Image (cartoon, rainbow, N blue to C red):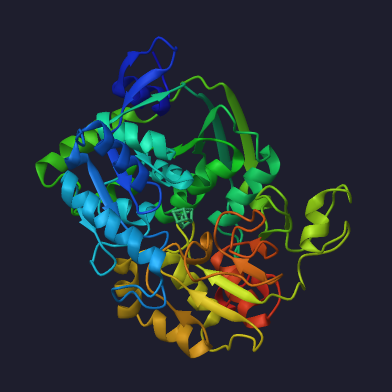
Length: 463
Ligand code: SF4
């Protein structure tokens, strides 16, 4: 019977139905970082348990590591303590660990794919909400809490309720200056931040098919911001070309055999969905959030509409009828697992090249991994940013969640390529976040205020 990738992967990993009605689901890959794991390892020790599948578990540091200097010991005492704790836990439990000075280090959702750990047809878990990123490869990937991190460490399984599947088709050509980030912000705006509760989102259609794997990761990354626990894209030749030759991907003939199986896991043409939504990509414009959740967004040319009693207006300092364009910014942040990949940095550099960051703006670029950092430096992108007045940082989560020294102060406004604009997300309880594409952040950094990136794109690609 025709079926979706979600159900095929779910069924292939279902161990049994639990008395609660939940499914005991085997987890193919568990990614661990320093923030959500210490208590989980403590619980294992208390019970005298071992890690069930250390060869399916990989750890790195990303959330709390400083990005200005990654020399050990870190100046930040908490960062040093958490890193030491993860080092010890990985050593004691036999888990591969990539510390801040290791060539494989980076944000969990960036290094999994770039090392080829993330593969189609897998179940993947990590103690971070944006684990849905890995769905870009046709994996079913869940963000989990600390007690579930313990469960996966101890048993390699999770107890989960099955999800419904909503197919979201995006068709048509994206205009110049419109990026994957604008697509997902538009989807969340249309379907709502709670619209995906109880669903896995399957993204498809011609626009998604034409996207690079990196763009697909941006789309799947923010599924959770639309309420969907899982977001995925069926694997195709683009996926396989990305994975071929990567360190942990199957090699040689095994890779070709894997491709056959990966293809078979894609949703069938006549698969039935619980819901279907269609969108016209050509109608999407550069989009920016104005409020305190990622669904509160407008196009850069649009005026904000909404109930003036909504607390977002008072918090953000906007009123109905205002435009976000023209809003003076204090900080520009290009980074996070949503938009810190090489193509993001290249696109931002195209805007920045030959310009200077506005005097009142603090601007930083934080590559998602040491590998991206190395590649960007080999291409001279670091010089483009530094010459323009950006700070070029070490890999990490940085200002996405400000569990490290990269934080907003007071009521600063940040143009950010990250994924959450909740109150206090970037470190200051009163700090304000405007989510947008990396290219839009670059344009805002140069202009000193939110602008339409299309007015700053190099001549040859101007729409
Ligand atoms: S960049 Fe942000 S969302 Fe991504 S893993 Fe780090 S803290 Fe989580």
